[in-house]
Structures are given as structure tokens and as C-alpha cells.
Length: 343
Ligand code: CP3
Image (tube, rainbow, N blue to C red; front, side, top):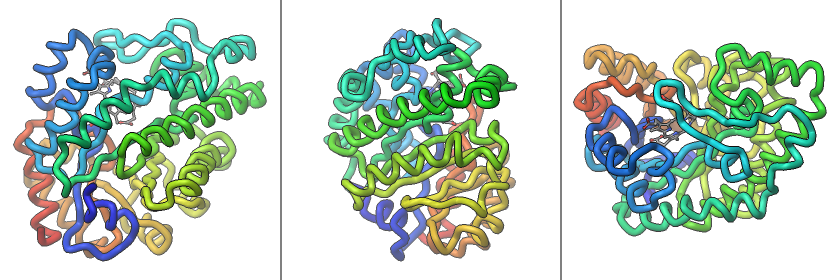
């Protein structure tokens, strides 16, 4: 159950500062590539609890992090709502029939049915819990409704977000209906992840920075807070980590009943501490590309430690690790975080 990790998320004093890495189970690990090759493709891997469990546990054993993160993807949610998801080699995720109208939205199935179709995720969680050592936590996750909606509306990743922003500014009612429907699925989905055994929730709003700060609450944050409120009322002992990427201008307006604020790499840790450090535990925030250099990694870990002083902090990267990072450099990051925090 990872007591030290959970305690640290809840703001209690712990003997050391725990560490994990966003996207720690993935392509930089040759062991991951081997299991993915056996599975045939990425989605098969997500659908296969035994293999998904195996790749979840790999970074715990190889890199030595204090928490495992469930191996899955945020996009299994719209997939099980009835959108046809595929991963095209070299291009990333694709939905064949993006949502353009109210009728498109009405065709998607609702919370109860969609959440119950995700049983392979809950089965994966149960298997992981049988095998994960008791001093490690298991992090479950979801995408924020906004980040999920960007893929559902654009049909794929985007640099400009022009299709969803056209909707934001010319048909906000429809965008809100999409966000509300996804929010209902996410609430149940995360509740079922908790019932299956996860110790911590993380909500990824990877594309938060696409929204202008004055609109961020209306189109994203308030839905994340709604999910956190729903979970906290029923499961107050489960820590919730919010990770909105790229919103330093929103720090003054952050509110809500959650435990940890994930600081992205472009937000100075000192600024996050000044604005939010009294209210929330802070997670982060090394620029993931520092992992290309061990010296740069050490310098950054020491800087972060100097700012946070080992209090109300979880060590992490400020976004996901990239596929071409040498494994030994990832291990170096974890060891350095443990060294400076006295583990
Ligand atoms: O350790 C972990 O974090 C693994 C579990 C995990 C994956 N995706 C596996 C994955 C998690 C937490 C995610 C979340 C996710 N998925 C996010 C939010 C996290 C973030 O970094 O901001 C987003 C935006 C997605 C959507 C997604 N999935 C994209 C855009 C892509 C393609 C990215 C790329 O680099 O090709 C994926 C695929 C994906 N999800 C991979 C993995 C390991 C790569 C698939 C492969 O093996 O080829």
C-alpha cells in the first residue's frame, strides 16, 4: 500500500521524499519493448491484464521508484464510450469518427456502461496489487475531461487545437455537454479503480496550456475539481494528484479538495511553493530532458531539494520521460532524489 508514499501525498512528515517518474513504464525500457512486441501492439497490451501488470512492475524493479503507475492509457475511456481508437505507427492516437455535433455525442454510451466495459483495467489493478511489494504505492489515473475531449473532438493529437477551440468560442454549450458526459464516466471509472485497489489517483490535464488562463477554470479545472469532490466524499483516505500542464498563470486561482499539485517543468518550483505550498503537497518538477545528462540531473535534483527542503514534496519529472533516455540515467535520477532526501 506504500504507506510512506501515501503519507507524503497527505502532507505528513515522512523519513524520506518519495520519487516516481511520469510515463515511467514505456519505450525507454527494452523490457517494455519486448512485452509490447509479444502483445502485437500497444492497445492489445492495455487489454491484457497479465502483460499490463508485467510492464507496470518493470520500472519499480529496474529503476527503483517508490510507486508504480498503472499501465494503461487515458484514451481507453473514449474508446469504451464507443469511439473507435487506434494507434497509427509514427502518428499516435486516432479516432475514426470525431465528435462534431450533439448527435455524435448522443451516440456515445454513458457512465455505467462505459465504466463497466473497462474491466480489463480493474483486472490489471487486482493483479498488480497481488504482486507489488507492500512498501510501494500503486497510482491509478485518468485524463482530465478537457484533455480527453481534445482527442475526441480533433480525432487525434493537435498542435493548434483549432477544432476544439472553434467549438469553445462558437458553440460552448456543446463543448460543456461533452465535458460533462466525460466527467460522469471518469467519476465512475476512478471509483472502480479505487475499489479494485489503487492507492493514489492522478488526473492528467496534459493539454491545459491550450486554454487561455481566464477560461481555464470554466473549461477544465472545474470539471477536475468535480471529480476530486466526488472521490473525496467517498474515499477521503485516497490521495488525489492534479497535474495541469503549463498553467503558471493560473496558480493564483487554483482551488479544490485534493492533496498534491503536480508542478510541470516550465513552472519554477519556487513560484509554485510560494503560491500553493501551504495548501498542497507539490510534486515535480525536473525538466525531463535533463535526463540526457547525469550532471544536469544531479544539479536539478539538488536545486529542487534546496527549494522544497524535503517537506511536503514528491520527487518527479515535470512531464513524461522520453523514449530515447538511457535507462541508467533514469536510475541515476531516482538514486539522486533518494540521496538528497536521505533514503
Ligand atoms: O508509466 C506510465 O505512465 C505508463 C502509462 C501511461 C501511458 N499513457 C502509456 C502509453 C500513461 C499514464 C499515459 C497517459 C497519457 N496518454 C497521457 C497523459 C500523460 C502525459 O504524458 O501527458 C496522454 C496525453 C496520452 C495519450 C497518448 N497515448 C499519446 C499522445 C500517445 C502517443 C505518444 C507517443 O509518444 O507515441 C500514447 C501512447 C502511449 N501511451 C505509449 C505508452 C507507453 C506509447 C505507445 C507505444 O508503446 O508505442
